[in-house]
Image 1 (cartoon, rainbow, N blue to C red):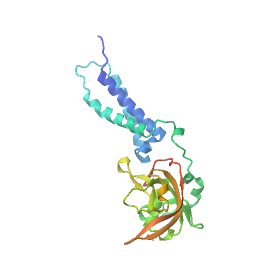
Image 2: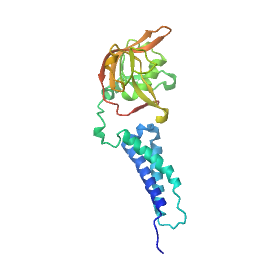
Image 3: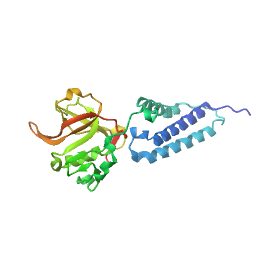
Image 4: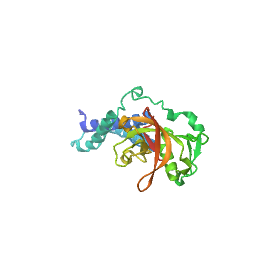
Length: 256
């Protein structure tokens, strides 16, 4: 009996295998961090293995005779796969790592791990963060700790007023939440995935706003202060210097 290849099963097997390999590639290269938090990594590996097994199973049925060939169910695989492929291409994740930018940021300097601070914010009470120098009254906010330092400082800014703050982020100017003489070096915070992402950053008072470009990565040094507004006081960094900065090694910050 002559056997014929079942195109639907062949396409299904290819899509399942490609999807599994895509999840595996995202996991191994750490590019998954552009979509979900590190806590989801075990689930990505599980999904990759599951899709690869499904692909193998579909290939075993390629030569199985069938009188009805269904294709509509393949859209469930095709559409997400094409969206993922387009997204990774748009973000340049297919490029070689060396062509994606330089990640030798000073805000990853291991020396700052020697300068520790224990958080008092109720949710994170007892957590150790870094870059705190009480003697010099300086705080260097390491790349991964933007959210934690903001949580600690906003919980009770009084102990830190007058400190020199050094931080980095992506310039945001055009927002109604900032005064005309302010910008913010922001980082994108993920609690689960990119669907719940939002930007965080200190308001920075700067007398040369017109020299900044929206979206540029910069490092900021300035003094933490409470500024009198018409009806309230606002916590700001009074900027001393703004310098170009390489993008962060990890694209987002996390709340854990």
